[in-house]
Image (cartoon, rainbow, N blue to C red):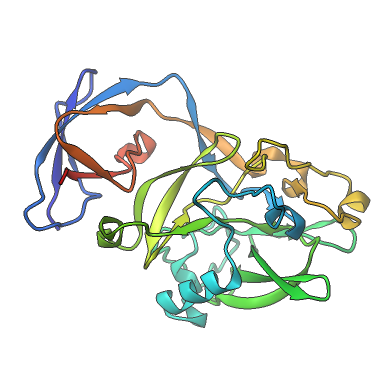
Length: 298
């Protein structure tokens, strides 16, 4: 793989940095001059994310930002085939035991999908269950009889279970996605963090390209619909079980299970010269990696 070289400009940062998160486009590797600015802010660092019922991810106001969508079961069927089928779940799970109980079977996180054992909230009594054991990914696909299709990853298996059914009020973990929009995006290697996603409430998330799809690389913590209206946060167990409209919650009603804040010291202010971004500009600071690749514009 050919490495691009970034020249820092305008702040007290290293004069040069070799960025390994780049890709080989023949004849398109150059030294790039970028201007950065310091940022007095914090950025989302998702942990388990929030839990959502089926009504919230199918609400006409839209939980996904413009240009993105809540996955249908067919989106996960494509992903399953692409990663190797039913036994490919370990390729999507975070490694180690921070977010999964042992054995976290087969976890290699090959595609940087970063699935965590986010658990669920039951529809019968509104109880929370299975944190660090299961990740139940919600879809917008109705399974009939008051159920929706969901996809499950588990600690004790390498399974990627497709098409199981949950009651509308079983709280599930949400991701959003879009199709890779350009030929340049398709050139990115699988597992590449290509820019960021900004939610309706302003939170920012890393994204990752897998095949022809671009996914959130973190669990969703969205609190607003696309029109700016709030998604109700329901804490009472009985009220959760009786819902007939969209709602969300945090595991054990603790927002600290959803996300933390990570300081991002620098953001791209300007790219100098005839440059074009691939996968978005991204940021510098999280793990000291520039999240984004750059190449000469056409």
